[in-house]
Length: 545
Image (cartoon, rainbow, N blue to C red):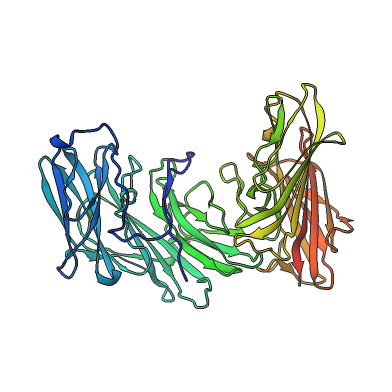
C-alpha cells in the first residue's frame, strides 16, 4: 500500500490553512529555490555559512540545510554543501536531514546558531537516536515517521526550505540536544497492518508527540489503544477507479486556545473501494480527513478525546449539490454563486456544520453540466460546460425565478461512474430583485443518506430502506417545510410518492425496495421560511442487489 503525504501548516481556529506542501518525501539534496525575505543587506557586510555533513557510518556526504531566523521569518535561506552562503548576522535555527547510502535511513540534526562571523557548520548524524512509536496491538507495525521542527508562534516549519525528511520506508533518527528557542519538534508516526493486492489496512494508528525545549536521547514512544481516540471510517464504493482518505492532525491545545501545528497526512490512499478502517489517533488534536473520499474536511470543531469513538462515512450512496452552489444577486445581476464545477456533485455524508461545508466532489467530476434560468416560465439564460456560469440582468421589482442545473458523473480518472448517482438535477425556485444581498444565504441542500446499505451502496432485494433527510445551509440545518419525497425503480420514468415523517429538523421516509436487482432513484423537495424551494433528483441513488 502506498501512502500519500502532504505537509500542512494549520492556522489558528477559524482561519484558513496557511500552506499545503508537496506529496512526496524529498531527498535532502533536491533543488529548492532559496528564499530571502526582508530588507536587502549588502553582501559585502555579511558573514558566510558553509555546511558539511557526516552520515551514521562516518562518511562525508552532501547535504541541504534550512536556515531560518529564530526571532521571526524575516530571513530564510536554503544552504547546500561546501558552498559559502552570505547571511545577515544573527541567531538562526539551522536544520538538515543527513541521508544514508541507498536512502535506507535519515537523521535530522537541528540546532541554534549565532552568526557573527563566517563559520562552517557540520551536521553529524552519528549521535542520532532512532524514533520509534509502538502501540499494544501486535498486528501492526510502524510504517512511516515524520520529524519536523516548527515554531508555534510564527507558524514556520522547516519544510518550507527543504529540510524535509523521509516519510515512507527509511528509518528515522534525530540527534538529541537543546531545541532552538521558540521551536518545537513534531514527531508523527503511522502504524498499519500490511495487506496485499492494494487492500486498505483494516486498522491504522496515527500518533503524535510534540517535544519542547530539548530532544531526549530516548525517542521510543509507547501508546495504549485504550488511551487513543477511535474513528471508524467507512469508504463506500462509487464505481470504477481508486479512492482514498488520509488523516492529518490540525490545531492542538487545551480546547480553548490553539497553537500552530505543521503536519503530514498518513492514511489509506490509492486503495480500491469499498474499505472500512478503524483509525486510532493521539487525543487532543483536531484531525483532518483529506483525499478523494474526504474532500478536505476537518473532523468536527473540537479535539478528539481519548477513549471516545467517532465515525465518518464517505461516498454514502446519494450525491447532491452543495450549499456553496446556488443563486445570488450582485447589484442588478442574478447569477450562480459557483461555476458549474465539483460543487454540483457533493457526497451527502460530508460534514456540514458551518465550518465544514461538505464542498468538493470526492473525486467525481460532472459531465456536460448545464443550467437554465427562468423568469416565471420564460427562459432568460442557459449555460453548459465545466466551469460555466451565467449572469442575467434583473429588475428592481421582485420576480419569481427558477434555476435548474443537472449533471452526470465521471470519476477522477475520467471514467464514467456506473450505477450509483448516475445523474443529479437540482431546481431552485425563489423570489428576488436587484440589490438583494440576502439571497445567497438562503441556498440549501438536502442531505439524503440511505441507512443500512452495504459498502457497495446496495440494499437487499425486497427489503425496506430508511432514508433520513436534513436540509442544510452554509450555517447548518434549517427547519424546512412542505417536504415531499418520491422514489423510482425505473430510472425516473415513473415516481411513487412516499410518506414523510419528521422529528425536529430531521425528515424520514421508508422505501420498499424492488424484489429484483436494480436501482432506486430519489427526489426530495423542501422549502424554507423565506419561500426558497429546492428540489434535488438523484437518478440511481442506491443499488438493490
